[in-house]
Image 1 (tube, rainbow, N blue to C red):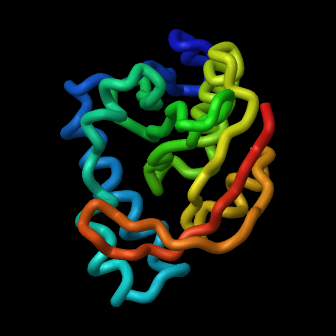
Image 2: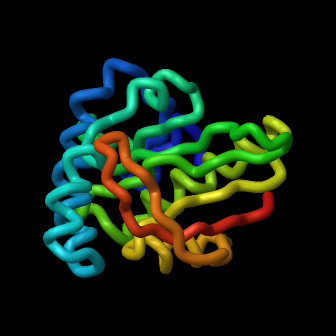
Length: 167
């Protein structure tokens, strides 16, 4: 899918700092609902305040993307960044609106990220997935490496699954 391909009812474009409010809203309506079956309320009440805020550095990175519906609403977001290891990158803050699940939005964001990362010399991507997202990441070619904890910006240790995929 290219940035201007709207055949599927959405287009993917690079995020910008001007998308901060819309991405915050997308995260705020998605993560609480989607993570509920896989995490206890005691974990979510502490984790969600940090997880539902857009990261300004990602929005300005050029490698974080939004999937925009035909009327301009955000249906999904996600992307990648380089990490300190040569030829490797990290999948970052992927989310799909719960009202738009299973419409190819997450897959399109990942395929776009894979293509751009590979063209940029990245040969392997790592992902710190929520328990909820593991089946999705497996479906797009990631393999489970094992459980881990991610320390969120709020200082909360959040249970996650470390995954990896070659390009």
